[in-house]
Amino acid sequence: MSLLFGTARVNENDHLEIGGCDTTELAEKYGTPLFIYDVAHIREQARGFKQTLDELGVKNKVVYASKAFGCLAMYKLLEEENLGCDVVSGGELYTALKGGMSPANIEFHGNNKLKSELELALDSQIGTIIVDNFYELELLKELTAARDIEQAVMLRVTPGINAETHDYILTGQVDSKFGFDVASGQATKAMEIVTASKGLNLQGIHCHIGSQIFSSEGFLVAVERMIGILKEWKETHEYVAQILNMGGGFGIKYTENDSPLEPKKFVQAIVEAVKGQCSLNDYPLPEIWIEPGRSIVAEAGTTLYTVGAQKVIPEVRHYVAVDGGMGDNIRPALYSAEYTGLLANRISEENKDRVAVVGKYCESGDILIKDIELPELVSGDLFAMTSTGAYGYSMASNYNRNPRSAVVFVEAGQDKLVIRRETYDDLISLDCD
Ligand code: LLP
Image (cartoon, rainbow, N blue to C red; front, side, top):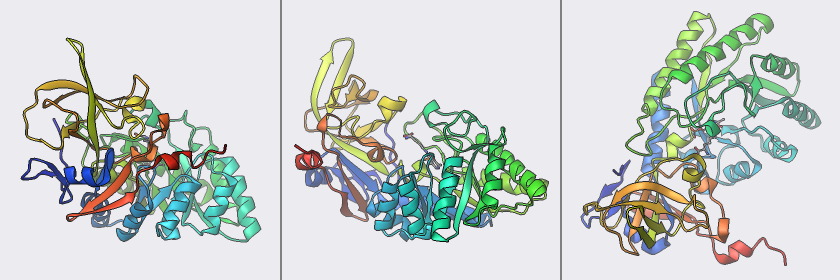
């Protein structure tokens, strides 16, 4: 069963249309595999988070986790929508700045930020650095002293939560490579160092409990722990936080089997929990920041593939191969992530075959969808895989020296190429002979 989000619809030619553009025409114009982003849908998601927070009457900031998908045009869009962004590398920071993000709206995450990356961040005067460990703290002390500046920072803490998601995308548990552990006292030690450092201004604390989370329970426990830490620091060190950053991780619908809470409900649950815990502990209500990535772009993205070879093994499996695969979407191979899709050029044709949609990479695990019912396919048909907007292009690779796909933004009947397709010359452009 396929899912259509945002402006996606079936047009009068029985083709998939997104953002008022016929996807078969987009395939003709830009080739496939092609990532298509429904810009109106991205805007709607972004505004939804912001509006809900505003309506709840708390000071807030929505910081898009740009690892989900970033490029110049995306950062420009974020700036238009008044969102902040989180970057996790010098490369993302560089792209965000070139894309026109205001430095003050950028926060920098990462468990091993390089000295050169921190230098770029400080020299660009970005809003916040989320400090992850003691090594980074020392580096920042040195670098801010050398520049005689003060940098706003937050501390990433691991509150010890096991949210229900895939192990690789769990991040809030004690045994994690990210952040300062609370239970062993590391977080408190870090707070003492920061508050005693002339060049660092501690704005508050941050946690991110995981990704593709479907319910609010983990967040509620996290809020309780975070306010617990803050209360302790207020009593023992007279430190009062201005900001509580609860991270991202709000789940989305990849298939009919997924039933995440609506984004709005996650936000309401978090804000109500923060208000409740603050009043219970007599703690001044901090600003509440969130960092949604996937929930802003995933459902807005669709990947269009062209069907090529098919292999039918009687009573075993019917393989349908498309012109992309694990190079443009590693998630099925890496996380056993499940997706669905539809035949973009003959949508309402009756499903006849149960097939596996596989990629063209030399790897048996290069299976995009293990089991899906589709109409009888012929080479040249267009298969649209839905909900591919997050961690698809951003995790793309050149495995087998396949060029990376193009990305197009569509809105109100207009299409705009935002990342061009790689060429073979691009592929050898870094080689030295
Ligand atoms: N904030 C922090 C500190 C994070 O580490 C992440 C994601 C986010 C926000 C955004 O989480 P989101 O709202 O997108 O779930 N490649 C994996 C996901 C890795 C997520 C890493 N951190 C995947 O494809 O599922």
